[in-house]
Each structure stands twice: as structure tokens, then as C-alpha cells.
Image (cartoon, rainbow, N blue to C red):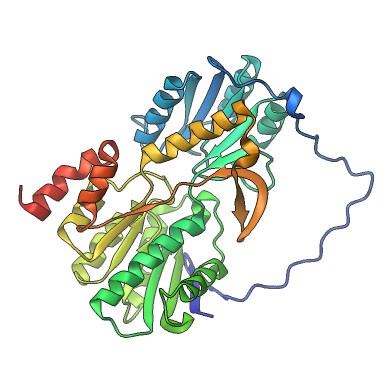
Length: 381
């Protein structure tokens, strides 16, 4: 087992799981959740079918790039897309979102795609929509297990963590850093409803041993800081203090570039410290400042999924429901175990000074906004 410690915004947590409480005994009189429609009762997905889309907005002034692309792509494939913005807890009344879902159901929507941090508050409306024959698909952030949906599109958190850790190991090997490597891992997973169990990262480390990336699991000592939900300012201060107390760190992983200020501080204190950023929270490509850090510092990298890839997978899922081929889709994994939920999982890519040209050639529309930054810093154009 790899050594690991977890710091949750001010307190430490043991890596050992506490014993789970015994399962509650459900009486036979307990009301069961309604069954979803059978195949003949689902609303038909066809040309001009209404497809609603609730999307989480981190910038309150405009659509995020992948959301706009998603609406355009849905329309290009013959569906009638209609989007609605979820600005988050501070700006959007949950009742407004549930009313929008109900409205789409009444207007005859065949599918609703939801990207939101408010899943728990939307549960009743989602259930009623499915009972009416509407397919519900979660996007980027999976719905909690307690809420029944029909498919998920997005990178599984373990996939991001694995890609980030593999990239950091490669950077440490090139640097020739002595083992064991002490790695600071800053996670946003609880802030967006994803699993935070240290055992997930330990399992990934064991997998990297199996595939030969690592020699032994104790090559890495993982130090994890968990970002607090809806408390960015205080958590950022705690993160700075926490990092200051960690001695002899060999590298760092940030699950999202929203910790950019801390990343800049790390770069100032230790310019050659390998750092891998990610976009597990938003699913978007690196922002301009993160791209500039990578362009000027070969010790930085970012793991992300091109928006065009994610969007195409949403349409693939819609088409699978339309054509009756959804049984061929992969199944979402929870705690490493496949469930019955269909899923379309894109593979993340890694942006570095060395890989940017290849990625620009593969995904020109996704990276055209940062190409000039790399051209300036890498080639001097």
C-alpha cells in the first residue's frame, strides 16, 4: 500500500475506513421507487425532438465554450436543443431549475441533459421526468447514486487521477528525483460531488505498479488536501498554510486550475517543482493563465478533455437511445465496480510544452485560444 494522508480543509483524516454501519432492514411495507418506463413507454428521440440542457456556469456573463458547442452540435444532428443556465447555489433558485425541467417535460422533451452541483435538489423533478418517459443524462458531474438517471457523459474521476499521477511520475523520472516521492495532491472532488476516498488514489498507485509505471507502491507518499465546498476564500488560505507545512515535496497535483493563485505561489517558491493541473471540476481546457505557466515552464502540465470530444459523446448517447443501441455503451464504475448505468467516457489528454503542437493539430478548435501563447513562449514567434 502506498503511504497516504488526507487533510480535509483544516483537519486530518485516517486512511483506514471506519467500519460501515449495519444495513437498515427495510420492511415489506416500505414504498418502493417507481419503475422507469419500459422501452415502449420512453418518448421517441427523433429529428426535431426537444432536448433540454441545464448547465453549470462558472462564469456568469457568458456560456462556457463546451456548452455553446454542445447546443450547436445537438442542433446540427437534427435535435432541437434548448439550454438553461444553472449559476450555482448563490445565483439560481433551485425552484427555477425544477420548474424548467417540468416545463420541458410538458413541452414534450425526449431527453434532458443536466450538468449541475444541485442534483440532490433536482431529484424529485428528475424522477417525475423519467416516469413521463424522458431520458435524463448527467454531463461532466455524475448524478449521485441515490438519483436514478439513464446515462452519464464525462470523465470518471479515477481516469483523471490516473492520468495526472502517471504524468507526474514521468516528470519525476525525467528529473531523476530520489524515491520515495512526496506528492501533494489538492482535490476538488468533494466540492463537485465526486468520491474523495484516499483508497481510490492508493488503488491507482497499485495499478501503476502493475503496469510497470512504478517499481513499488511505496515509491510514492501521497499527501492529500481536500477542497471545501462553497468556501473558496477560507479554503485557499488553509491550502496555503498546509502547503507551507509540507517539507520536501517532490511534486504536486491539482485536480482543477481554480487553485491558480496557489500554483503561481508554488512556481515562485520552487520553479522546478513538477506540477500537474487538471480540469476535473469544469471539464474545460486549461485557462489562459494556466496555459502560459505550462508554455514558459516545462515542469508544468495540464490534464483535460477537449470540449469537442465530450460534446460528440453526448450526441453519440442520444443517437444510441434513438437507435436502440444503448445496451452496447460502457457502464459507469463506482468504487471501481461497474454499475448498470450506461456511460460514455472520453480519454483525457496531457498538455505540455512538448505536446502542445501535436494537440493543436489534433484539436485545433479546442486549443486555438492558447496556441499563440505557446508559439510566443516556445518558438519565439
